[in-house]
Image (cartoon, rainbow, N blue to C red; front, side, top):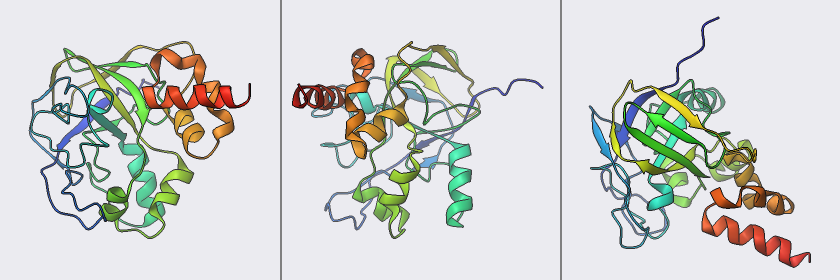
Amino acid sequence: MAAVTARVLTVNVGRLEPIDSGKDLPTGIRKQPVEGPVEVRDPGPKHGGLGSGLVGDAIGDVEHHGGVTQAVYAYAREDLDAYEALLGVELPNGAFGENLTTSGLEVSDALVGERWRVGESLVLQVTAPRIPCSTFRAHLGRKGWLRTFTERNRTGTYLSVVEPGPVRAGDTVEVVHRPDHGVRSSDVFLATMTRHDLLPGLLVAADDLEPETLAQARAAVASHA
């Protein structure tokens, strides 16, 4: 059987819109597929930077979203399909607020620090799982959504921009580097959200963790010293 080629199915961007999430902030979570190419660059720091890594993509809550380690959000079409079956609703590409909807690629279980070459020149690095928030809950409009999303641990992943470049629907995705520590984005989510006893084990991937996660893991070790 021929190997499945990993691809970007759609590139999705959002514009600022109001949403009743309790935050009193507009949101760019309602992302729609766009014709490419879309330029992707390092957006700089979360506070005072450009927000999203995708030119033309809007982020409302810049205190908690965007910046270097959350420049791009990717989600697998296969996981969207599983949620369609679970929820009994149609979930088009971009439904979870992802910038890249992919196929044939392990996204939620990608290793932190893993690097993807997308198309000819764009290189992205896996940084962290997506943490569900009240905006996500309001966007989906499902009772108990945050618990469901947390329990299933199919979070997709955020990525930083290693080498900027354009992205368009149909681009191939090649994993060009995998670190040897074995810590997946889903492992980080589990440890930080529900299994705090697993936090010390994340330190084998210390060089690839977000600063906040690294601090949590080190604090967990110190508390048991």
